[in-house]
Image (cartoon, rainbow, N blue to C red; front, side):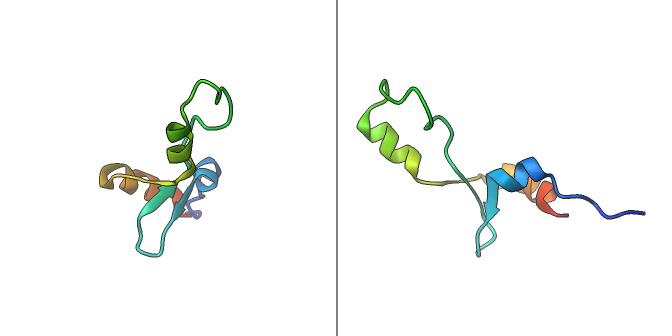
Length: 64
């Protein structure tokens, strides 16, 4: 039986931190920014951390 391949689309979007949490970049920050407030754009800069239930699914996809 062959090895399980890493889902490359997932690998590009998510990173696993040293503590084992899954980190992702916030969506909706690349265009149509003139309609967003300064506060919204500032919060979109920070990376988000997935909740535990989603984290398990993403970790399975990242294991190669």
